[in-house]
Length: 368
Image 1 (cartoon, helix red, strand yellow):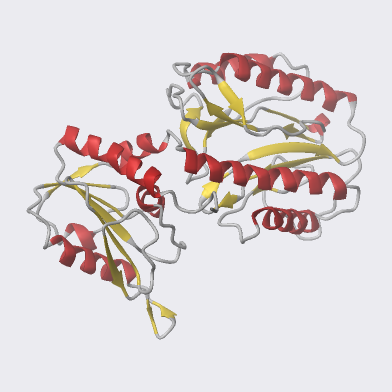
Image 2 (cartoon, rainbow, N blue to C red):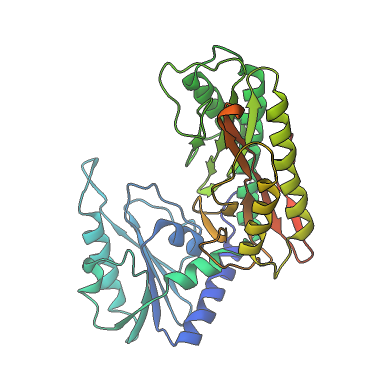
């Protein structure tokens, strides 16, 4: 059995967790339009250029409205189709059409008076056809998505394995004169070789002698520079996000000093994080460690959750006040930046929060 196929039991478990929220809030149904929430709920994934919609009744039945010819692979009870294409041409009015099909299907359901939906994306095609009172269930969906199930962890681990293969290839090819586009192309190929299928997302930073950004045409790596590779390939919708910094030639004393302070942060994270630890406090503790470095400044977030979106909760950031929970998968990405570091460095690990602490998911070299 393919370990990455849709786990119907896990999907049904996520549906039950949403049902608990629905019963607490006395919702008769929930309608979701965001692709991440549809995949989380049903297991079925769609390309970004399609406009599916799903709904769940308080009795547990799940309805999916999907592009024509979609096979019922996920944990669904009723599959309806809409024409996403006409004679092979993608339609620009897919949302109107999928909404029409959903609204027709809902007429067969028992009367609903209270419907949960995503206020940020629930458009008038649906809203204008519903007489029930609408409630914003989007924050609850994000909260439920924090706890990663075994099937989700399997895909995140596979995405991370893609980054490990990418860094191994980077260490083979990075040298003075290699272009950023060469590195980008080689690393994308390495991830595809690991997945044995196309990536469903890619990123993030491929610039040499820079804090980050997409690869630049003609830009070549120079002796003495640091190459920050902050990589976020996605496998079947689930993202990795970790970084390594590689010295183009021998690292300088200043660069090695900065590296020493950055790696202290990981020791602190692995010692301190467990369920109940405050993520804002962890950020402040990391800031204190990095402020002691004699070179460089740390002036960005410490990390964030990952999953079906590159940035999720928990937020290791002073603008949020999150608390770590068992089942969170998060990144920690301390960095130091200064001209004397040839722009700077950032190193990033991915972690799973367990009942007793954390498991490091990126168990490969941190060396420059």
